[in-house]
Amino acid sequence: MSTAVIILAAGQGSRMKSDLPKVLHKIAGAPMLWHTMQRAQQIEAEKTVVVVGHGGELAEKSAMEFDAEASVVWQSEQNGTGHAVQQAADVLNGFDGDAFVLYGDTPFVQPETLEKMRAARKDNAVVVLGFEAETPGGYGRLVMDGDQLDAIVEAKDCTAEQAAISFCNSGVICAPAPLLFSLLGDVGNENANGEYYLTDIVGIARARGLACTAISCDEAETMGVNSRLDLARAEAVFQGNARMEAMENGVTLTAPDTVHFAFDTHIGRDAIIEPNVFFGPAVTIESGATIRAFSHLEGCHVARDCQVGPYARLRPGAELDLGAKVGNFVEIKAAQIDAGAKINHLSYVGDARVGEQSNIGAGTIFCNYDGVNKHHTEIGKRVFVGSNSALVAPISIADDGFIATGSVVTNDVEEGALAIARTRQVNKPGLGIRMMDRLRAAKAARNSK
Ligand code: UD1
Ligand code: MG
Image 1 (cartoon, rainbow, N blue to C red):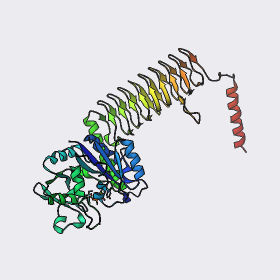
Image 2 (image 1 turned 60 degrees about the horizontal axis):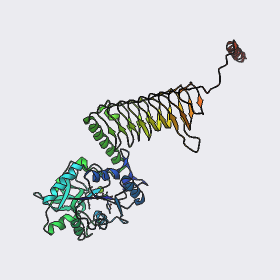
Image 3 (image 1 turned 90 degrees about the vertical axis):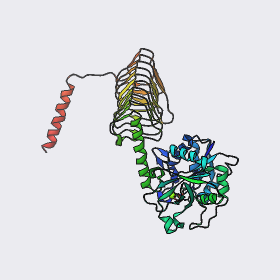
Image 4 (image 1 turned 30 degrees about the horizontal axis):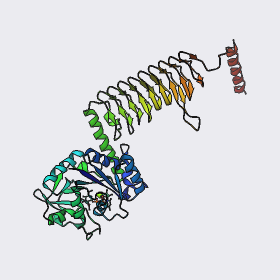
């Protein structure tokens, strides 16, 4: 059975007090919207439809960035969740599989939970995801009759008896797409908010004699984000889960609470992550690599048995091959570091390739930028670059080249050559001590005044 996912993301999120649409605020380095779009991928949905409204241009751009195949539809006025879902009708015209409705601001609903709902669809026309709410407050109440869901009643429209129900609506609903839109056709707006409630489809389906049920999940999965505080809490939940998952997969985290993951961090087994390491988006760490304390990585790939840090910075496009070493206060950007190469101290390596077994000495700077353009540096195999050298790109140093320490290298260096590019040292006999004597005498004269 094919599946479509409709993601509601038109709401303003006024409690965020932000110019950014709520669903674009980030959790683990990715817009909240992407977390929900990822669910659609995980349950192998053929179609994803994102309903945008407030800040819709930005939301649309972000949705496309995550999945260029997704459809974006507009809800220019926010007349309720039912009205929002209806905006997807045209895009899903002719689609006869199941449709899930998810919220763009509820990032933690698990794919396994959606699978359970899909299974329950066999015997039911409409399946709703519910949870036992600690504080039912403003949630819609699920009115059950045994296994059958009779109705969802919004908090504002509840009788006292209904208000006492603690089994609440998460907002996630699954039904065959044609039925969903047919039921929505019967939804009116005569309620406390004057809105078209998606939740009304349950009562309407029951009146048509259709079976409806609710699957329940943990309240934590249904956590929504409405404020900056919620955002911080959601981040903490994500990080907690990511740390657990990494450890379960065989990664050592010396101080788990201090490691920050992105939504798409991949770490192989037997990797060791020391305290206070930050992973930005798009990082892959292979088995057996060690990331030492206080390192910051984003958009990079670290192969097996590499050592990174402490205090290293790997920026987008840093590619470390087997067993490469990157030490303290080294920054690497858009550079391929081949197997066994070492850059151990205080260096900047940008727009470059460093060949196998080469050694880049302390304080080496790859001068990749002339103020207007970026240029490439090519370093061959087994090259030795002495400390405190500046390599002015574009430049290449062939295999087995040797750069004398303190050189400013502006010309290519051929295979096996030694390049020295600094002024020659001059020693003046006795001048050192004479200078010190003169300085001391001048200071004494000043102090005696
Ligand atoms: C909704 C449910 C309620 C459930 C609760 C769970 C309805 C009528 N009520 O209430 O039963 O317990 O969620 O959190 O469905 N949205 C749009 N367009 C709109 C209105 C909303 O895109 O016109 C989006 C919002 O951005 C949000 C989601 O739909 O992501 C839910 O809307 P919200 O206003 O938070 O609904 P609740 O009143 O919380
Ligand atoms: Mg809400």
